[in-house]
Image 1 (cartoon, rainbow, N blue to C red):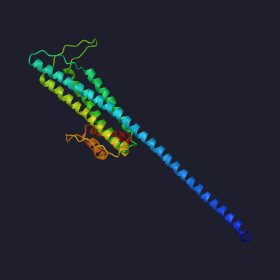
Image 2 (image 1 turned 120 degrees about the vertical axis):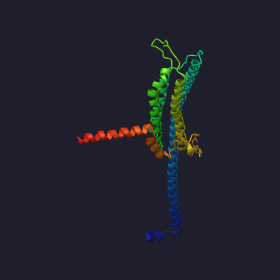
Image 3 (image 1 turned 180 degrees about the vertical axis):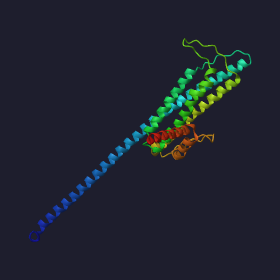
Image 4 (image 1 turned 180 degrees about the horizontal axis):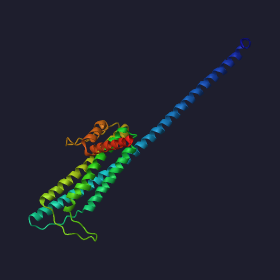
Length: 283
């Protein structure tokens, strides 16, 4: 090869060197072009993936807004019915105690019960949505716990205490739509109706507040990077009111499980279940 190269003339050597240089430059340029195309393709795929993630985040947030607003609307509607009912019963009771005529309360227990069922259904849809959004942050299940407590407390009030104390104070319609004879309660009885109504309304207000906390967390985690902002949590006037945050999820979960009737009831059921399973294994 060396002899061959030395036997070539200067012009031939120059031509070969030029051709080789051109080939090397072409190869290097082609390789760079391939690398550039690969980089651009990767960037394009990353951009498409990021765009799809943003669309998914927006869709998840929109679903959460729809379900949360439905729950809040059902809670507000029932709260309005309860306040109107308590006021009408109170006015009728005071009128009778003063030997004055009164207007028949328009509230009926079946309508209030239907309003509660609408709220309960909306709360269950909220819980299902929370479970389906665990991919956002596993700690989000604290909202399932919070709404479970609300449902437990409000259901117990509505289906037991409310029936015993409030339903007898309301006009009752027969199957044909005619009213049975009605006598308003005493002022003390009307006050008991108001107190019972306020207890249920407190649970409904908690549900509304928890949906607000939920949307704040989703905004910060799903949309915060789009706008480079963080939404602040609510600051309730009542120091006993719980604000649900993911940062305090562990502490809140512990509080709900140890300091609420729902949590204590669950603990009792779990203990009874363990005892039954132990007895079965012992047999």
